Length: 266
Image (cartoon, rainbow, N blue to C red; front, side):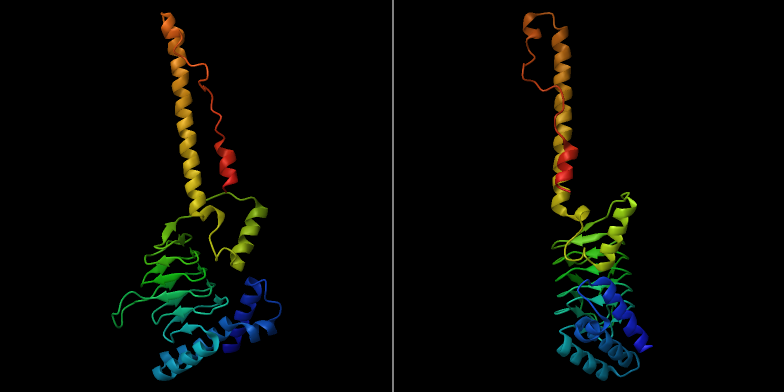
């Protein structure tokens, strides 16, 4: 069982990390793998009444790897802790299958209540970016992402992205991808390339710029309609003064190319 999990972890790292070249390199040089292997021993001790021994094993795991996982934490299959230095996982934290966690991440608590659920639960396939802090006994849904340096203190829906301090929840919009683009997105997600920041569609600055572009485009449309109405009124005017109220430089057609600007900030 232990060796089967170890082989599974090595295969997972070879699949997700383009820097990993051989199984021997992963086995000997990846602290995340070492930390998980030692955690399984510590967790077994913890769940079989050997509390002190579990803490002692996890203490040495932190010393050797720089990764602190409480022996009470539950860790699923194919979890990849990349780089790993400074990662802290609390006692009541739960990490689902296929999660990716980067360096400096804290799965911590905001409560001192003994025996309560104080630490977060990560669903299946969650990616947590470098130096992110996920604090509290809530759930981060399946396939969600936490951007680098984010501070998350509330639940994150499945498939959503949390960015910023305090974290803002960005729910991904459904979009139709061509088969080649869909394949690239799947490979990138599997390898964890979106973890250090956020994807193009999730970038808050990009979203803000797109909002401004749409707003400006709407304003220009309204102005063009007003000038067209003024032109019609001027044509119907009886007096010379009324017919001359239309400025010669009035822009009666729209020239604002919102689609082109949206493409540039994508």
